[in-house]
Image (cartoon, rainbow, N blue to C red; front, top):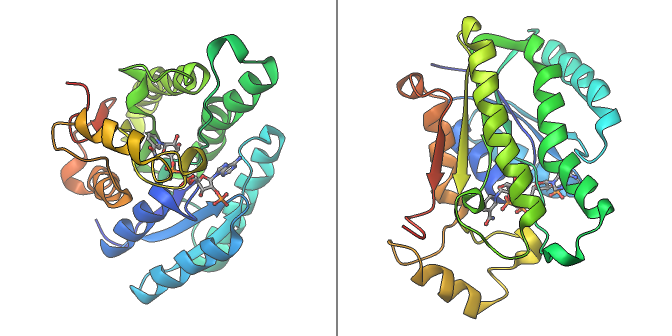
Length: 252
Ligand code: NDP
């Protein structure tokens, strides 16, 4: 599979950035989105171009559900202008934020924000993008280990990620006739900027999570991008409707 085009939400840093680079290394072009970090996103674009692939960075706020139609129309325009095509191949719904909110403190505003970012935007962006995803394409939704084990304070976040896991199976079932697969990658704790760099800034937490993990450490972004690239490869095609947890074996 050569020179396919991926759309990665939240590709300016962390896991999305690593996915973008790992896909580019495999010879794919990338459209990545950023919310606030335009400079970082442009630096990722430059790295992809250095690898010999085409890339663009587009602004997207997945908390703004009303902007999704306009965003998909912008993607169509870019595809035509930069690639002379109407469709792309891999949709990777990765953008997200962390928030530690004790269940008894959670408000409707917290709930609605995390629902928009982690579930509603993924549901409707996928729906709106499907007409411009090529047959035999791939949809990969990023969930979390916290749907299998509980991390106090993650009740809203993990519930939305759980919804993504159910949604992914329905997408796989309903678009399988087009040869499109849909899968979930569920990372364990990864040391990124996520949730105010919760792991990087708290050595005690990092050591506790490492001690809960069979491979003896927390994850890094580079542990995840290659899994997404594999799912987008020919060899990954027969995996469909699955949740793949990538955690080094946490809480086994
Ligand atoms: P980072 O904080 O490092 O990066 C988050 C990315 O999402 C950035 O590109 C950011 O854009 C983008 N983003 C944040 N808010 C919005 C928004 N409202 N609209 C659009 N884009 C947004 O996080 P990670 O890379 O660690 O997380 C990526 C995904 O992985 C998330 O879905 C997260 O839930 C999931 N995950 C992470 C784990 C971890 O431990 N790190 C564990 C399990 C799952 P910008 O840079 O422009 O602000």
